[in-house]
Image (cartoon, rainbow, N blue to C red; front, top):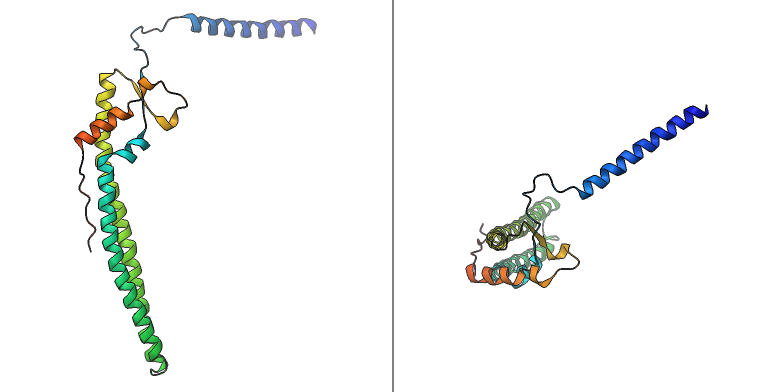
Length: 193
């Protein structure tokens, strides 16, 4: 029995020793390929670029203008619905229950139509903004790729994902300057019926 425990101990010791020796060897051994480039990193703040980009500000202004036009039209519709509701309330005593129910259904259909229009326009505005922002993102990605290539960077990180960054690695100002120079106006598709 003792010899069996002794044998298991030696076996376990052998496994542990061979594992630690292999780990030490892998720590001290040079990389096999020898052609791996050192890791070079650049960092950028996408939030800063989105907040300060001339093109993004232009997109926001266009969307705000479309939204203002849209809200003015909706306010007219809402005013017309309020008037129609007041007229319907006055007719309640004059009309038969069947005729009143019919007019009430017509009014409700009109309300549903306005609600659908509001939802449709909101989706159209959101979609137009997304499409315009994609153009900005594409151009920004091209600029970042060019900067990464010129600096021989193999990794680009978002500033929000890092804790501490040397100033020389942060390319936000350079990306923003180039983006503002290359992309000022991005047409936003106007929502339509």
